[in-house]
Image (tube, rainbow, N blue to C red; front, side, top):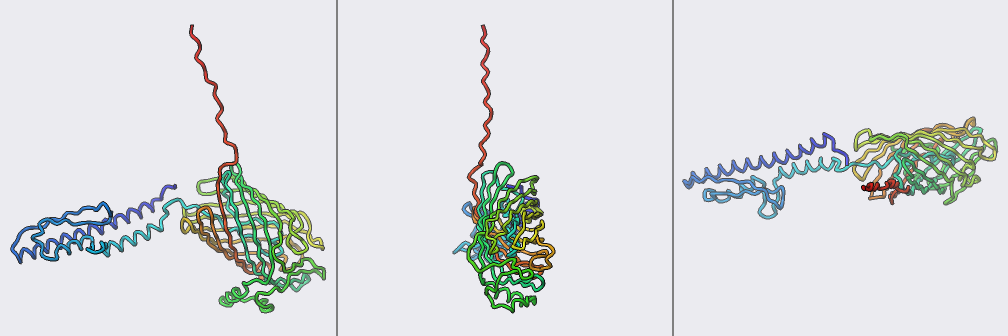
Length: 449
């Protein structure tokens, strides 16, 4: 557990002083009422006995106080109840505490609950990637943290993303994309040795009419940023997926459910470790396991390398994540044998640790295109997206939800993507064999003659 900061200790001391001040104030009022009551009794009855008030702590309840009165003969009827009520307002029926003390306790508890009771562990950024239907067939690094899993620690994730796509092109490149795509990926990761992590990503893709059109239309109308191309197609319809160049078909994707995409493997190694951050290098390879005829895969082997950084900006509150990577497709695609160039991806993410179980995220992602010289907004151009979401931890599992919005050209990226994911982590123990200390031969004492 981390050492609590100075502001935490100050807040705790302030809460304690507030409770003590309230109790002291109640006792002072009790003494004043007792003296006034005894004076009234002396004037009316001529008695001079003065009550003595003793304050004791009830061992069964730390906050409860009792008043023991001596010389009660000088107390008129009802004075004892007034004295007890002034001290802690202990009701004879239910033992309710005073209003002022209760308010102070509620306020102190509220701020106390906002303070971290234990070291808050970050849950990492949202694993967003490029969901544009054509560019996603190439290798991409999901946004991730630099901290790797411990030796033997494993993580299994199931993530599904619903992307709404609508784009047209009317130049030399003719294109029509109107559908929704579901990308469901099974991702596994395993910590190996000291500072190494290996992972795989197995995606399954589906295309159909979808269900997000009415929600997107209402949101765009609300903010006055309506896409005119949406009026060309009925809501939740599969309008088509094809791209042609001078009459030659480059990409054509039918409506289909659950097709295998390209399988990817990756490895990550921590190269710098600090108490407030990490830096790691990443490498990856994507294999052409998806069918190219229906745009489920690229048909080429892709290689990638990059860096990942995470840093604790505000201890136990805000984490910063940064990703930078380069991808090199090794081959040509489509029947036109289009040449591909290396492309870049970049991401910046912030995680706010709301509590020990809940985190809030705000991210920015950027992707360049592997296509050059086609003068097509669908195939070329830089994609810029914003993502926001939250994650909730339940023991070894975590559930997260996020929305990804395109802030670049309409035709360059998926209009909007809704993401859901479940992560499960477990640590059965280190995989590497424990190192045994070398045996030392016992020295026998020399025989003395």
